[in-house]
Length: 166
Image (cartoon, rainbow, N blue to C red; front, side, top):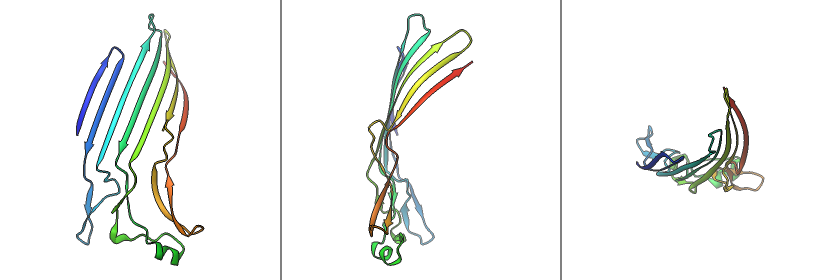
């Protein structure tokens, strides 16, 4: 793992982290295989900046988090057997030998915080997966189309939040 970090200074922070790894297991047949989570690497960038008013009663914040990672592993589907049986049949002897496309996601948050004498309130808008990338989650045999179909993770998700702390 390699990380670079700029601690909070002048209301700005930044962290860049890279990890390279292997995730494997040995089954009862004695064969070492990848696990589902053996994406081999993950790169994360997190940063943010707060803009504080002169009287320190209001703070506007902008934060971003980006993840780029190797895709999850998956087990190949035996298409002929699936077509014959009418449901998904995996080739278990080749468990986790396929790798989904790389995973990419960027989340963005903008917020406004008001500091009062006895409480603090924050209004924020989080936009998860701001690029609306549809990352592959898994695959299955689609008997209606008679072919292998992919399931995708959720696209863009806006979350509006209001919080009061006292």
